[in-house]
Length: 253
Image (cartoon, rainbow, N blue to C red):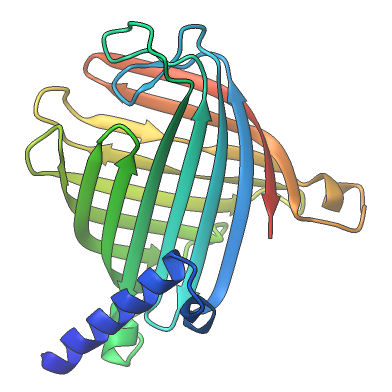
């Protein structure tokens, strides 16, 4: 038990060092991918999440990173949002910008055990965590179990189940499903869907699927790290049904 606990602590330290980009990160990560996204939409009226502007218009710059290291993987993103923001009551504010971030580290039970736990379509099992923060004081902390599945047609299918505690609700639950599906050599369909419980809003549904086109591959331009496409921002609960189609540009390295 003590040896296993040491492995978990070591993995978390390794993951944290990767997340904050100190020199140890290069040693920890055996694979990583980072991208910068620029998105624009014109129907943002989501006061629950704070994505609510006077004219509905919002521009988002997103830095996103995914890395694999010897004990598992981790994912984080930071959103920098620009618009004429309203408060939760719909009143004008002086805010022209907002920030939001998430970090989701996972520890592979196969790596801790020293044996591959995969069987059939089950690729691996993880100890999973997630930390969400914004610049206005919102916080959510989660811990649970995740699985990766090997499904024909999917480059990635990950399902995570958490116990969730945020500063708006009592202890509740959340499930997060992430997918990536290639639609031929130039197109891909990827994204996530979050489901979680609340005290009074019923079940929250939040999803941001993306349909992306690779012009460099399609026209044989000699580069394949620039993508253009659409993202659908969808958030629904008992009192809210927010839907925004955004245009986007994504640069991957």
